[in-house]
Length: 127
Image 1 (cartoon, one colour):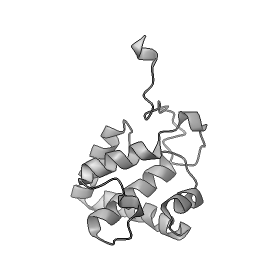
Image 2 (cartoon, helix red, strand yellow; image 1 turned 30 degrees about the vertical axis):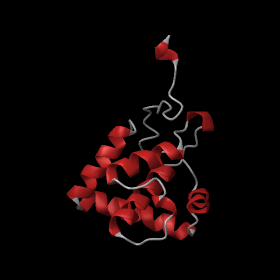
Image 3 (cartoon, one colour; image 1 turned 135 degrees about the horizontal axis):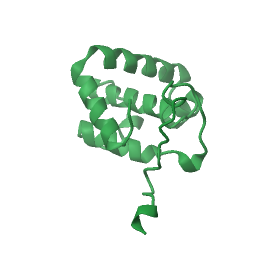
C-alpha cells in the first residue's frame, strides 16, 4: 500500500529518451516536481536560507544557486523561461544567461559539478 503513495514533493520522472535531449517536452503539472522542493534541496546543499532566489545579492554562492535553480526549472521542471523570470522577478535574458553559465560551469569546474551532482541526487534526477 505504501508503494502506491507518492510524496507531495517528488513526482516520478519518466526515463524516456526524448526527455534526455533537453528539448522542451511539457509534462502535465501533476507530473512535475515542486519548485519549493528544488529550492529546499539547493538551500541545503549551499547551507543558506530558502529565500536565496529572491535576494538581490551578487555573492558567488548565491548566484551559483540561482543559476542551478533556473536551469532545473527550465530543463527539468519544463517551465518556460518567461515563467521562471516572472517567478524569480528577473528579466528573461537573465534566465537564459543563467542556463548558459550553468552549462559552462558544469563543464569546467569540478567543485560546481560535484555540488550539482549532489543536488540532482537529492532530487532523484539524472543529468
